[in-house]
Length: 223
Image 1: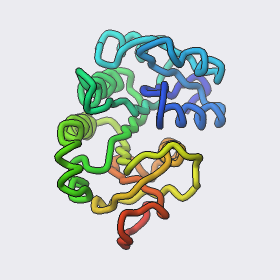
Image 2 (image 1 turned 45 degrees about the vertical axis):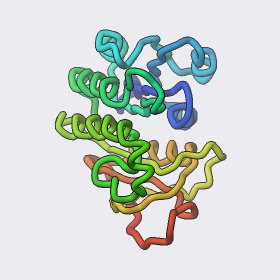
Image 3 (image 1 turned 180 degrees about the vertical axis):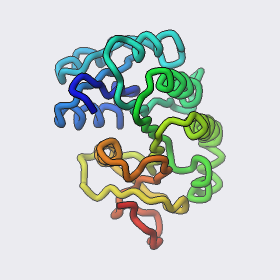
Image 4 (image 1 turned 90 degrees about the vertical axis):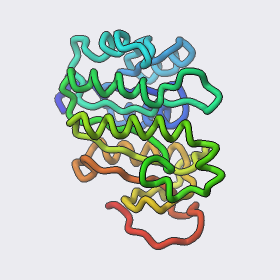
């Protein structure tokens, strides 16, 4: 990554995306964040993050944000919505980001998805799958679009998200049967780990806290 390159972050206004923004700036990386509204702008700019207003659901907004003068080294997307939301960004928003990332010739695309997506559906009980089904279907489409794009990717599927401080016990695994909880700050740490290393290139990884597993399954941690 050159000193002129940016990390492009979609979803920085809250949740895992906000935690990722904190860690990126702590590492003195140049960050450009796409925001739908002004709500989080002042806080992010105070962290020395370049803010671009735009909606990931609008392809021209994404092109204007990502194809500007500054080269984009990597894209990190945490965008999504609650089941009660209207038009969901889980697929279409991420599809736009992926398509424009191809044009921008980014080196890596990290997509934060969810346990229960794709082959990890086996990790969730039937009731949870029924409740989350429409959301997970959209996330699965986004995952598949990213894989098919030819971009260098990492897909991270967190378990149930909590807002506590980082425990440092977040782990990644390729085992799709694993389910549990994890703090958002620990997911962010794992995302940064994948950004800074080639070990997770073109991998789909579940993210849980080793002390918050549902059941006590044995599984191989992804080092």
